[in-house]
Length: 401
Ligand SMILES: Nc1nc2c(c(=O)[nH]1)N[C@H]1C(S)=C(S)[C@@H](COP(=O)(O)O)O[C@H]1N2
Ligand SMILES: [Mo]
Image 1 (cartoon, helix red, strand yellow):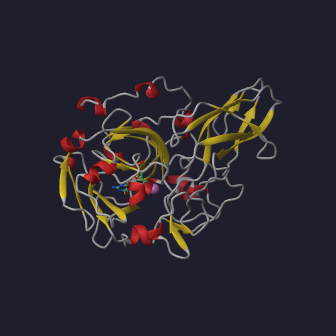
Image 2 (cartoon, helix red, strand yellow):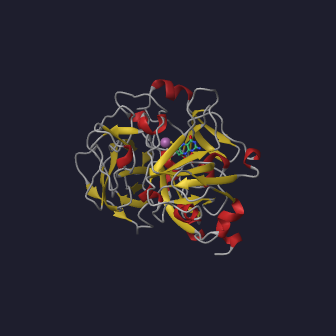
Image 3 (cartoon, protein in one colour):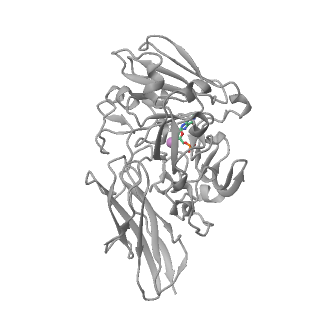
């Protein structure tokens, strides 16, 4: 691929003709009262009609109606930060990326032009916050009270992380790849946001240093000019404004690895255990759980009793979606939805179901996905202190007239 094609390149077909759906205007009733009182749909410099949850640090959810499409547009893509010291575009002038650590042969510093000279990879992948749908936990748990929109799916493009690491020479004893970004704690004492991934995941060709998102430079709030993309893994590892990488023979020890983002050992299925960060009782949250979302109709909509089509997306950790079932009666009876052809193991898979004619009344719509590993969405919430991995089907009430 030629340089100028790397950012504004192929794959445009996916971005064409987004479907038209009414915008969400209401907040889910299950959110805590405090969140419902302050959350608002707002426009931002590069974003429009996002659901503001907190301002400092910036946390903005994507409205549910956007998920009628597989690709989430850049100006609707969710925003999640831990620290209020978000860099400005000007701060990123002269950006560079250092690669070092005890398990490389030499420390190097790469400029954007160096990244553009490396072979380019592309992956269509969901980025989902581990705390997506935390706001629906019952009882509520502490943290940003995300509804459904702490996620999105985009075409990510850039060099594979392994090609970037190769430039520094990776030693045989490499255990983890530590990553850091340009955002800063607002005050002393808050630990800087740094994360690590196991060397096996770092060497997977789909793990990339993305410099383009949906054929455009990354929006500032999504990590301009470069971010890590770790398909199948929760968003916490997808370091934005990536500035430093260390390859190490040691596990990264800090608050963000050892205290935050952990779940009880054995609670959720994983293909690749993160052994160097596991203890007997807890493990870092890593691979996404199988999940689905109805994006049309929306909660409270009036629908035609002559029939309407239920539409949405399903996704998982990369085995792919095998089946989506729909219930019209709050989970008592289920029928199979139609699946569109898969667009890659890490992408949303669209589903739809025409209801046929109905009697007037209230219907409680639910969707439930199963992946190729045979894992199905949970019937009952697996409660955990961090409020992670909520994949319980949630009824959406609509009224047929
Ligand atoms: N530099 C930096 N990168 C970060 C974070 C952050 O706070 N700072 N948050 C992480 C988390 S928890 C998530 S869910 C994703 C969200 O990506 P987005 O803001 O582009 O949607 O970014 C990840 N990368
Ligand atoms: Mo997250």
